[in-house]
Image (cartoon, rainbow, N blue to C red; front, side, top):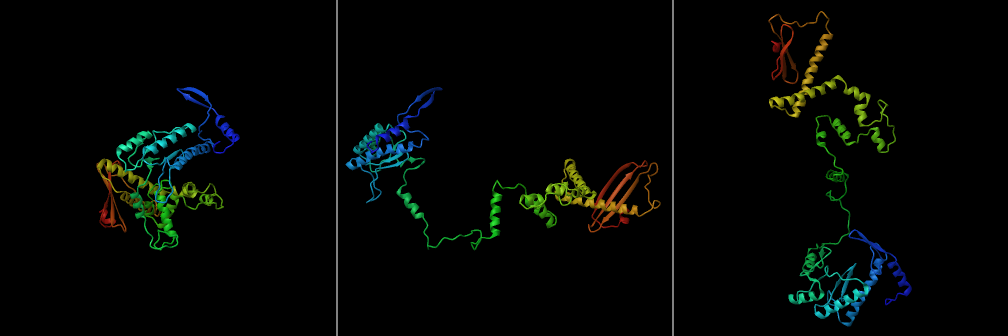
Length: 410
């Protein structure tokens, strides 16, 4: 009523305050209902405004004391307005001169405010800071009157220093860089020397971001694909397949390109990477051909042979040597097999030379020497059979000499 509100408005506000009730648990027992006569409720939109109205009473009491000369605030400089208090939410900073009279006046104002509002000052969380011009004993006396702890520094407010000293302010001002000339701001691209955007540098920056980001990081060593011993178009195709950017019909439809999904070769299933290279009839027949299967089988045998050689003889070869040996061995076998098949097909039954087992008590050794043109090496093979035609032993060996087949077999 002192602030000018009518009785009807005050009754409306009090009806909002006392129309609720609370129940609380105390030692696992329900206590209540409790009907409030004052106070604030968390989440109530009216409570903050009621708090502001009540706080105006504290502000009015401080202004009256300043007007009477019982309190004196602080000034940041000569001619500046006097500051007696600062409010922030439910916290406040109170300023006065460091003497017993003004401290007692502040305590009287706070006591009056507590009786009128029903609120109580939390002295445990309160602190007092007194300037360095007073003795420590005088500071202790004033702290004892206020009933709060004395802080030597400026104190901590919400985890941060309550005040910044003059030295810190001066250092920050001196550390501020000065601009030699005033010009209008402009957009510049730091990735280029001329500060102009380029698609190439923009792509490189985006790739650095993608590689460093866990979300977009792609596992695998892509350099192995790009450095593979294959034509550039084959390496590029393999890279596009692994990255999922091969323009098959499934990928085109994902990018909203209107097209049919069926494979243009077999016209059976949806054309994606799996169908093109493995499920399509042409791909299956290509993979199942004797040449392809033979190369794969020879490579697998070389890998298995290298494993056994390491296990029993502690001898291991480099992966590149294994691949090269498998390739050379299959080519040698294929050359001999093709030559033999051609000679058999071009001769009659009477011209064929048949192998005969040796006489009783004898061992027959068959020798074959093949010179691979362009390699600078000669392959030698030996095979031993008894008089029953049973295999006894055999061996193959590479010779770093160039001789004819007749000389080698001799």
